[in-house]
Length: 124
Ligand SMILES: [Mg+2]
Image 1 (cartoon, protein in one colour):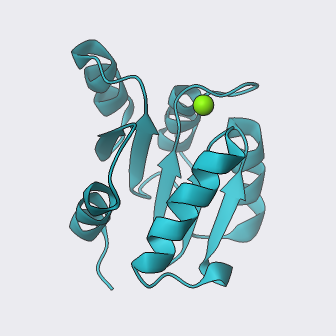
Image 2: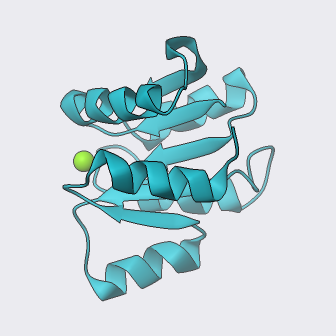
């Protein structure tokens, strides 16, 4: 399982990375990006991912802009995306779902929640 973790907080990327490792994802099987611009570059060069985990609030290109860009077309158009964010309001959730995210997690979250959402999206 290959995962792309997108968050401008290195601490949050580390936390998410630890959880996906608990799920059995090897260290070499997930990559990290600090914003949407970096994520898009990685997507264009590193091939397919099984799931993209992205923050919303980030500089340069935020998570919502990244989701829209991915869903607009190209090689990753169908790749499952989970938004992990502090933006937990009903209208934000609806906005994200409309943009094409497959699932939504509000920070702070437990490892179990992330596991549950990932299990629902990818197998093995
Ligand atoms: Mg952020």
